[in-house]
Amino acid sequence: MRLYDSLTRRLVELPSPPGPIRIYVCGSTVYQRIHVGNSRPFVLGMWLRSWLRHTGYDVTFVHNITDVDDKVYAESVKQGVPSRELSERATAWFFEDTDALGLGRPDLEPRATETIPEIVEFIQELVDGEKAYVANGDVYFSVAGFPEYGSLSGARLEEMVTQETSELKRDQRDFALWKSQKPHEDAAWDSPWGPGRPGWHIECSAMAEKFLGPEFEIHGGGNDLRFPHHENELAQSRSLGHAFAKIWMHNGMLELDAAKMSKSLGNVVALQSVLEVWGREALLVFHLSGAWSKPVDFDDHVMQQASARADRLRDVFRGAHQAAAECSWERFSAALDDDFNTPAALAVMHEWRDHDLLRRALGVFGLESLAETDQAPPEAAALADRRHAAREARDFDEADRLRAELEETGWEVRDEAQGYRLVRIR
RNA sequence: GGCGCCGUGGCCGAGUGGUUAGGCAGAGGCCUGCAAAGCCUCGUACAGCGGUUCGAGUCCGCUCGGCGCCUCCA
Image (tube, rainbow, N blue to C red; front, side, top):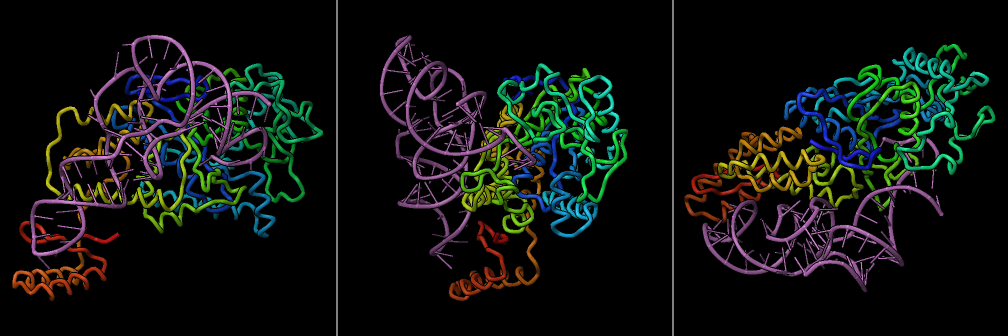
């Protein structure tokens, strides 16, 4: 199994099974409902865990929830709702929406607010090691003290400007590890530097290391996190001499009208609404059809195609089983082991008429539901029986009338060599 | 401006030196009372221009175009 690593910009071979493989993926900041774009790293993480386990690896998948951030405070002021209440509600939405994907849960889903002691300890170590400095209740990481800074994003330190201007910073390229409480912020935690809350990047270093240790195999997240978020995580952890992530997986962005879907641009489509309109199977097939590392367009047209593809796979189980050739699974497996190439794996799956093999492959992606045969309700079955009788009696007008009636109830009848089959219209 | 990614047939999308990707949509056929589904057949693509090579969608250079990050963002 090999994966593209954005730090070395090369394919990196994973250790042999059973590993272990420890995965950390950056989750969303919770202050509103997540959008479809947010589902990509979640789905990728769940699938990667699933496939690695399938091939004999011992996997731990940690996916965090950022429930303290400038955005949370800002939204809380705007809505006139306490920030804790807002983030708790949004966290519940996050669970609801991702549960609806039907892929199960990551092994651990830590929240920043539940990791404050570890965060404070982490910052203290950086201060003690003179990698960071305290300024009027804030703590900043000193970028100039970390020579490798910029290696992940490819940016050169001399050319960097500023991250978030502050007069308390010694160098405008430095970033905050701890921010002192501001007047509009209704929640804060005690620390050696006074009441405040963690900066955006430190929480991930702390959470990843708390559950996976100072060195782990894979760190994932959207490509937009490469800088500054991941660059800063890397700097914090490596400054303490921790190896941190060995492979950085940055998934491509979902694009809407050729622009990245993002909450700040406002061009978002809620995950919840996509699931309502298209269903989880179509969305998962959509995610399967594009390489994880590349950007993809999201619109009705591609969802329509994904939906039709899902139906096509479903139809395989309505046809006859045909044992596939010996090497079939190997081709599927080879595609996934080669940088988790899901479009290529999906192409192999489309060639199969082998029910067992296809069910097994679909199971890797949480799509075993496509193998389930529809159970028509009694009313539909009764109509279909009447149509069948009319057909036998060669009363085709009546048969066609009943077929139309059946379709209105959401069921399609397909005549077969002997009898018929009822298929749900989607 | 800096860093990075990408440009494949009507659409989506694999493929990194030489044999069919796959899917969606479309056309024709088989099957069917008619359908639907399925099966068979078909389109003959690789942004442009040079170069390397016996041979390039696949390597190199340039040009054009698109996207991301450089500020919160999966």
